[in-house]
Image (cartoon, rainbow over all chains, first blue to last red; front, side, top):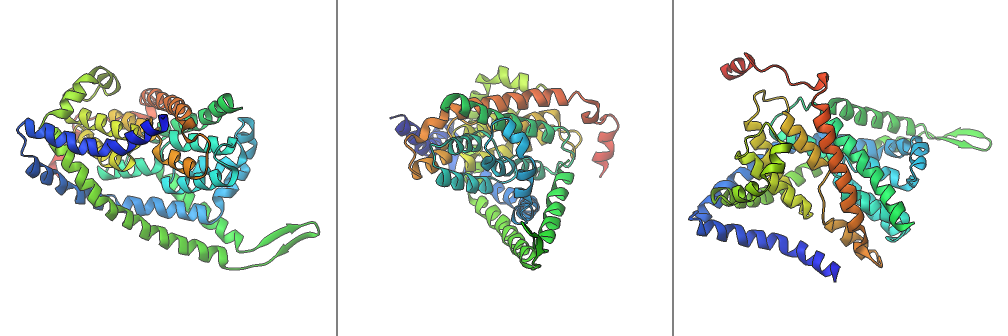
Length: 178
Length: 225
């Protein structure tokens, strides 16, 4: 039942937005077709503008992951993660999550199928993936699109929040599912 | 800081791959060495693959961006965003004190957050880019982030999620008895991280090392260019 509601919401959200906004605009005397194309024109520029930033981030991440450095870092930090009750298997995900959404999704899929979706590892991985974001990617792309280079405290604040999200994912799963 | 992180990821990765080429293996009888170029070759292949992937991804984004910016333009021209933004004004004014309450940036931020709350990742990105673009219009020093930008970025990177649609899908597909059981925990965890994001950005912006440079006199020199 709840799943149906949630699935229904996911399915309906975009069609409803696509229906509601143009109709609302029409009744507010907006020339909907012309205004739509006027806005859409900007789409190409924005997408092209972010290519250099995407390439830079993808390059660094692919080197770090494919070289095995990611696994090595997880191994070094395993004493700390054991202390907060995070299974070592989750660690690559905790590092990958701020860096690459598709990479993190790959790790989650792998963990869920290997250990089972209803195992502690599977649950923590799911909650962590759902409650954190690809921080570096978002910062690089967003600031890149407006050519801001001095990002001040944005990265430290975002990374602290990520850490809080990662730790609370582990803690909440232990409280609820242990 | 992103310079250091980027350089570290790149150089540490290459050094580790180089070291792996020595093929040192520790056994009970000491250690043996089996050199091979394979780790470096694999890394090089992966780098080219990912660079190509970055461009495909960006081009894949053109259509979606155009679609959402078009819809957003209608929402903007019809005054719909102002209606929504007015309702959330008290919270937004507290979060972004430097942004005038009726500025288009407020509406864009609200729309972007609404999209990411529903797990509409692809929809949230163009809306978020629009929001940061509006914030940039209020920025007096164009290459430096404002307090409002830092707060907004910290909030969006902490992900205000209500429905993690993709994860639920993966769990269901791999035979979970209750794929949606993680929604509650996700809302709690994301609530914690977003609260931390807001508190941290408000605290850090007061630190001397993150102060904005003085603007007086600087504006003129920028405008001369």
